[in-house]
Image 1 (cartoon, rainbow, N blue to C red):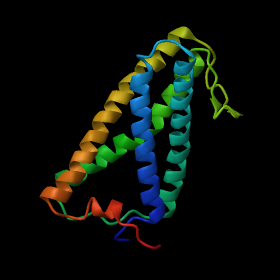
Image 2 (cartoon, rainbow, N blue to C red):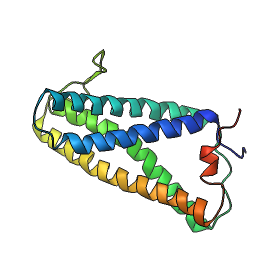
Image 3 (tube, rainbow, N blue to C red):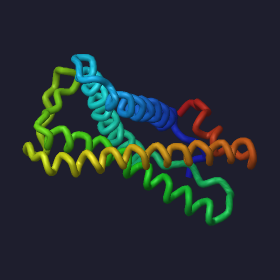
Length: 177
């Protein structure tokens, strides 16, 4: 088993992290905007970031299947368990958030045209009652995702500043591979 993450894994982690933060911030801001052409454009940007996250989710998953993660660092068993549960929840949300957003858009009668160039298939037909269900899942998922990210960041800082271990440094080191 390796002792460090690959450069590709590190790059995917930080690119996806940045995109998720952008998607969350834009998602919360856009809902309070006055209906206007700008608001419609901001909704499109939010959807495009979400579709990009979804695509990178699968790229990252394939990369992880082909490249083993580093061996876990020594820590109490309960911390390993919490870390595994947190990572599982994070990965589930990275998949579910873009999908529920896509489903919500389609059920609300809006197709997605990625970057105004590539029409994406409608996953469901227009259905206002289904749209409200997907909207609720998407909105709640955003809150849960923000909380999980907060816990993830706090745990990384705890490992770095309190435990003085390599948990955070392993995701910051840019090694040749």
